[in-house]
Image 1 (cartoon, rainbow, N blue to C red):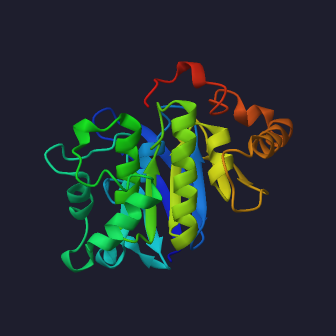
Image 2 (image 1 turned 180 degrees about the horizontal axis):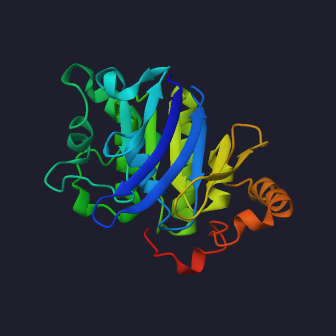
Length: 264
């Protein structure tokens, strides 16, 4: 497991000289699940790309176990799950998973177990275009855990899913994460989703982005999407304590369900 220390003193896009992130710093303990929450367009994905070394054009540094990440990048097992599944359509489900694994670790038995974990044990030979959108997300989730990551970066991976499908994926994520406990940074604008999944919430301001509030989740683990009353209680407590923070945010997976695209 790895501990992260993130400091972004300044991130500016050279195309328009607009400052996106300024004087932002936080730490994530080994095995902790942290959600970054903020309105659309404030730089959540940009921050995740910095942590994932997909964007090195910034002032600051990211440390892993007290060492600069850029100097130790090859020693970190890191997975990234995006908003889209990003599967290769000409490869089968199993082949898509094997693609990111080392040959000596890509055992059929391990891959089959991952597929069982997301209830796709009969779909290993299927091609992505033959799967529903929700099933493709399940493959992407299994692939994210296939390298046994120490660090898992997730950029709104369940966005646009209908409520039942999204909740199934959240439950799969919690079940698999509980087994291996990688350090997770999860980007979302959905506060209830973050409460369900996370140990801690980090709320981000409008641009230039900085941290305006951190909140520790009191709910015990393991958790399930079925425990909606517990999630609502935590959300209502947060709303009472900090109503100003939640203004402008999408407040929950139930509240905006009607606007979501149904993907079976």
